[in-house]
Length: 421
Image 1 (tube, rainbow, N blue to C red):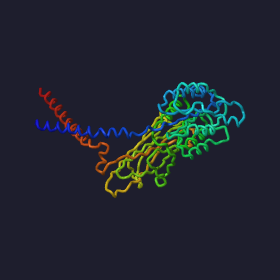
Image 2: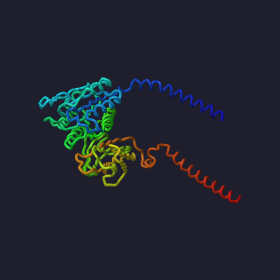
Image 3: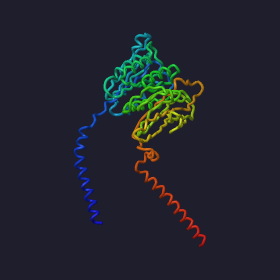
Image 4: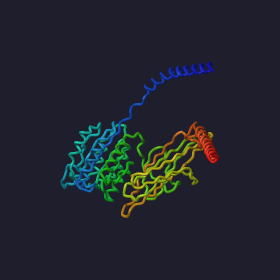
């Protein structure tokens, strides 16, 4: 017994010595090969300061006042490392000359490291003034934010459609066609139907999102989410269009995708899962307008022959601006000649809207596709995710069963003993 302990101690010491010798150069090499820091993301907030921002219909205060307070809150929470700028439109020219009014856009705070005090002071000076040159503002903002290898995002906050001759949706399409991976998200303050349509088109053209805003807290939360998202290392969303059936569905690779889905509609997408991979898919549907309470989102995977493989459905009650569902599907590695499998993904929703609410364009959909290492053979699928700890689950089940039997036997014995007494 003593000999075994000494031998064990010697083996442990030898192992530690070997690991120490082996790890020292590896650690030094790892330090030398550390990847360079990720390039900083760039964000520019584009704020409408036109005359219509005087309207007092956001929680009893003016739209301009609500926007200023939201900006103060957002500037306090900008993540370190994010280069942020602010551009205005309609902030300086109160006259009636179209040519002058449609040039009324300026950079209020340059894109770069954020001085919160200076940025807040600049926003505090703004007063609702002139026109709504959204197209020219987007063109200028794209130039403000160009350059570098980090992500780029514009967040447009406005209460009306463009009042100039340039179609801002065409501007957004031109920006997307440049291939600079710039995402434009749009927020409409108490918008009418024409404004919603225009802002939705701008966002959709660049893989961004559109949100209707009716309360200051909602504006603060949404802008903060979008700024925080710029610091995410995830891939830039790619616009796609789901099919009516699996047969005509687009074939998607690993990545993040955006689409639109009308109320109670189903969209189909296809992915190819290779042997030894696990498919992980998640979808979020955003209610960017007034909807009825009690709704749901469905995400399921089926074979090309219609057999359901996996599904998830989640519901909402009107308290959130998005509902998400996610699935996992592991494909065993099998033999060398095991073919890849095409999986059809169905995204459905049960949203409905009150009378008078436009159902077009459809609700924004965000779909993520990811692949990770899967099981080596079919027998592993049942316990996949437990690793070598599956035996512990079985042991706990046996111990629980035995414990339950013993507890029942002891209770019966005590009961019988009490009756005898």
